[in-house]
Figure 1 (tube, rainbow, N blue to C red):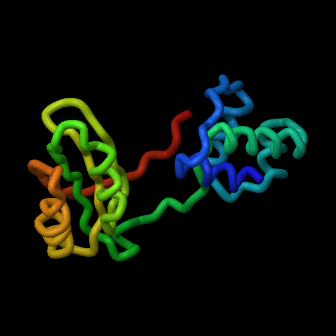
Figure 2: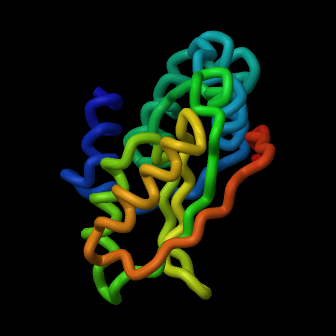
Figure 3: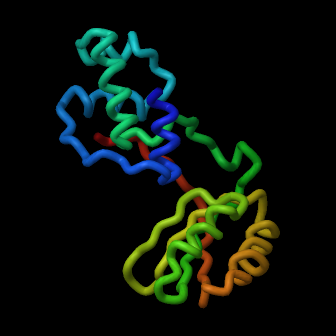
Length: 166
């Protein structure tokens, strides 16, 4: 099933097929599912003017191709008890990205990890219950990773998730 293949592609246990070009209907489907991941096949089909079978096949192909990586809820972190957010920049030992990434994935509250170019190597977004938890995460957990040379914490005062702009 597509959901099994989706998990396989995410975990890296199976290679994803080469990317196929997306047509206007595929892009409309992506827009709809980004706005409402719980939309039914029927409503998707009606809104993009294709049969339910065609909509189902297109969504499955988008999942199998790795275009759709999953379906989830957009969370208000503050209302969910994680009112402190921060971007943390890291400088790491050269050629240790994969090792560091695996350790960062295990951090509580880690929301986004990116290898970047510039004055630092990694950008990490975290959501914690409060400043004390953030301090603990940075000083105890992050700085204990041997491959992390330095960190800089940028406290987020206000944030907003943008709606998809496909």
